[in-house]
Length: 252
Ligand SMILES: NC(=O)c1ccc[n+]([C@@H]2O[C@H](COP(=O)([O-])OP(=O)(O)OC[C@H]3O[C@@H](n4cnc5c(N)ncnc54)[C@H](OP(=O)(O)O)[C@@H]3O)[C@@H](O)[C@H]2O)c1
Image 1 (cartoon, helix red, strand yellow):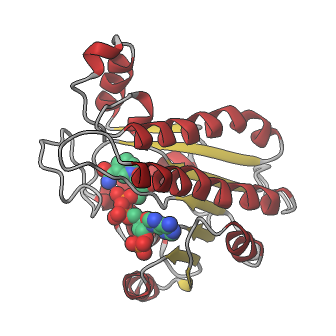
Image 2 (cartoon, rainbow, N blue to C red; image 1 turned 45 degrees about the horizontal axis):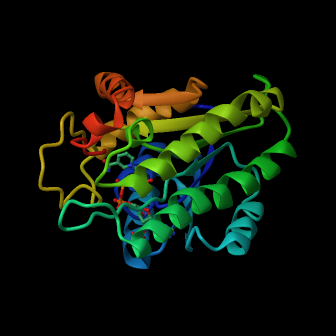
């Protein structure tokens, strides 16, 4: 991670985004962090400053395309951008997300990712490449849910499948232009998102460990980072099952 000095992270006020910010915080590092909750964002920023990083915070909704482009465009040189902000919604009766949740999930998990990655790609294309030929790195936090069609969260699974496929399919062309794209597909991570889940979450991992795995994969230039590996394998196998059997699955 030595060549990653300046990073920008959406959804840094909580969970995986906060853990990523803290893992990147060190003397000489500059972090641009955003989220909607100013109090929690400021707390994360303070802890990153305690580790020696310079931190710029922005209270910003990833659905605001123009404001996102302005924020990213004004950040200066960026070595790493992480489109992490995301939401999930569950119906109390275990059924699919309702209409409002469905629209919000696509707006944040897909629209918000586009509002982050497209301006970041544009900015990085104008940056000079380093000695390794890399102009910058962009990661999106998708999910192992990208590989399944869980009936309790169709919009979430579909939104994550869309960003995963888009990132992986775009990666070769971006790489030829010196930009490394990574789709990150975690299993269950113990954050505010999973705090209310009433079912057993196999392989549940703390966000600090998840952040280390993510940054290791991003630094290695991997196009897709799936963890825990066995859960990724199980989800891919489950994705091959006939739809009637998929009816019992729950998504990460
Ligand atoms: N936890 C898991 O098991 C798991 C597994 C796989 C993938 N993921 C993905 O990992 C990412 C982070 O989730 P998490 O588990 O860390 O959840 P979390 O603790 O609930 O954090 C979500 C973050 O996204 C931000 N956010 C949500 N909507 C936003 C919006 N419209 N504009 C700007 N920021 C917004 C939140 O900011 P505010 O709170 O300030 O609004 C918060 O910082 C998500 O994309 C999620 O889908 C999570």
